Length: 360
Ligand SMILES: [Zn+2]
Image (cartoon, rainbow, N blue to C red; front, side, top):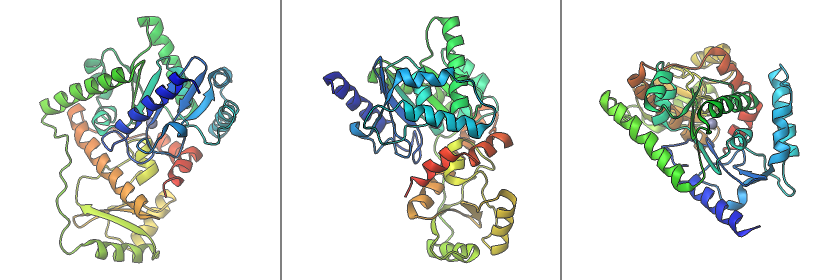
């Protein structure tokens, strides 16, 4: 490997760690990349930004990856996603065993050397708000706003199209792309510029939240004394008839009432169960959505559930993140949940369930 390549892989690793904290992403959310003329190194699917090292990045041949943009898009989503996987697999350079992030073609479409894509609550307060688009135009006139598009191939093609139009109008590619109900892409040729762009985004949004009297911290009161973790776990295991189910619990906060972003759905499901845990309440929820709940809210507690302690804690973390996003969205006309169609796409998306299954 050439020296400059090694140096750049170190730089993108540093950026991944810096923007891999809970302020920017939860679980395996977000992705980063660095590129040369011919190669794209991107975060593998099923890894976390904070856990990346230079050797983990997946190397793709950009020429072969570009074949994706020539394919006529099949109508059926399943066929479409299968096609993107095949083409991405064919673009892997020799010796690559990991699966590249599904957002790899989007990283390739941005010409800048470094791309850091995250889902900060600070940003999603705007992207998950009713007036998000108007606010974006006012606060970030130099950025690109994307209305909601299903992630994967569809998103990549839609963003490429918008980047082209942006370039035709402004003579340059956008450095910042906000995605409705999702997050932000930041692209620049140096790590320093990436940091400055993120700082600029945080400064402008923080000033806006302060002006709207909107706290950027979520206030979580203590759990009521009669509902300690042991008691919650007992009630939940009984209601689910599963004696190994793991539980994370916190005091009550205003849980989001619907799906905010793909990550919220993947790690905590689209809707909480707001009822005291009982076999009937769980059965009713399952009947309605086709899967068991992962967030339970009752009597002054919020519980995250999962097959492991890590998954339960992550579900609760997403619920808290969602509550903060909901709180921040008040500065921009109130929260705007994902549509039913968008929700169903994520719930049925194999790539996302792959990612969720990577969290042990
Ligand atoms: Zn994303």
